[in-house]
Length: 128
Image (cartoon, rainbow, N blue to C red; front, side, top):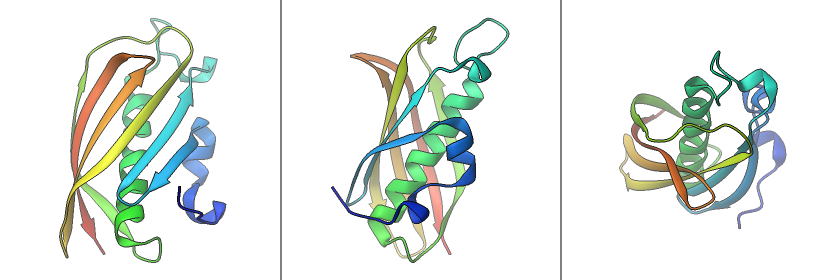
């Protein structure tokens, strides 16, 4: 696991959501999120926006773990498929850089709860 200063890994937004970085390796990030009351939708499930935010945060960290935390990258586009509702507990997002070019990175992400796939996403990031 990479040792990166906490200030470079956590953003105010990820802290607001309650994201917890579990692992950082070259081009890979694992980030966990607990279903807290403020993250529930009207149906009392984990809000899709919270899942999407988790994915975007994990993908961004995977990019930084690929090209270095001294260089910025931003989301150009991201597509997500929601496969299962989450009623309680934690979810874990694993993001992996599939392609790291000079200008763009393509990243894949899985959100799981235990052994169940909750969401699948793919995104493109621009290197600034």
